[in-house]
Amino acid sequence: MASFSDIPLEIIYQVIDALQDDLPALKACSQTCRVLLPLCRKYIFQTVRLIPRSGPSSAQIRSPPRLITLFGRLLNRNPGIADYVQNLVYTTESLDLQGDNYLEVLRTLERFPRVQLFHFHSANAEWNAYELLSLGLANIIQSSSLKCLELSNIRSLPMSIFIPCINLTYLSLSFIGDGGTTQSREQLHFSRESVAQLQSLKFRRSAEYMKTLVTAKCSDNLPVLDFSGLRSLEVIAYGDSDLVSAYAVISITDKLETFICTAVDLENGFTGLSTTMNVSSFSTLRILHFVFDIYDDTRDPLRGLCEEFGAFPATNVVEEITLGVTTDVHFGCKTGDEWGRLDTVLADGFPMLRRVSLSIDIWTYSPLDGSGIILQNKLNMLPKQQFPWLSGNAMVTFQFSTLMREA
Image (cartoon, rainbow, N blue to C red):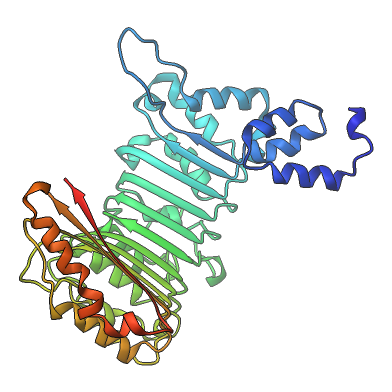
């Protein structure tokens, strides 16, 4: 240890900070002396992933201990390690709910006092199926230190679980089933300062749950979660129902800055975007990102976006628009003036626009028949024939691309 005795602690801190993404180096440093051990553990255990092991499955192959089992044993020997964990990822396995494993997992989940990000991926189970294990999960979800929460594959998740999450700023929900009532016997009256003020929201395949959560109230008539100050919304919409839920969110938030939407199988396109947008958000919304498919050469290739953009007030502050389109050779898409309407709308009503990106992916099933090349060549003419304003405007960076993909 003599070699470190004359080095100021500030220098040692800076060296360890510089190595924070180099786990092998951190592990090596942690073994050199006791002074470096807690400094290295700060980064070594900052993110812990308790997920199923990948590998061959066979009755003749003895499965190695599960990661949550191993980490639980580590905490038994060194309980202070749990204090370093800030980001926790946990995916359940069937074994987690069997016999002694159940209590072992519960004891492990109850030992993280400072988690700031928690990602829980369920084995597509009812929340109540976890019984006592749900207490360990709730202990993390409702921790005052938690700021970011990602939940996936849970049915009947009670909305009341979010009420104590007073410091939550980011929420991601994937494949979350109907949560039913928000009322519970443990529910308390909260002051306005106690309601979580969400800043970012992401959801997919959770349409009905989201529609209820957006308007859910506590027994004191305060919202379960406050969406009014939301700044970023990302939705992966499988059909119109998910998009309707997204519109329910943007109708109540008045500070939205970023809206990202990946849409599949929309019957009505993006109709309703402009009319459901909270009027106040038009003065804050800067980034729009849409990814969608078009498999019909008789329909609008931009799925109603030109009409919606045209209804934006001229005082909007949108700076960046990204469009990602997927089509295929079999169904095709229009290649004419329908695209040019976008150029006109953007030229007339988006004074702050600085970046526009349009990428078109073309799926082909028979690359040798030449039809894919023909469609791609037609689409490659769009910048010259349909987007003269975007292509020639020095104030706007316009990126256009097409890509052939083989199914």
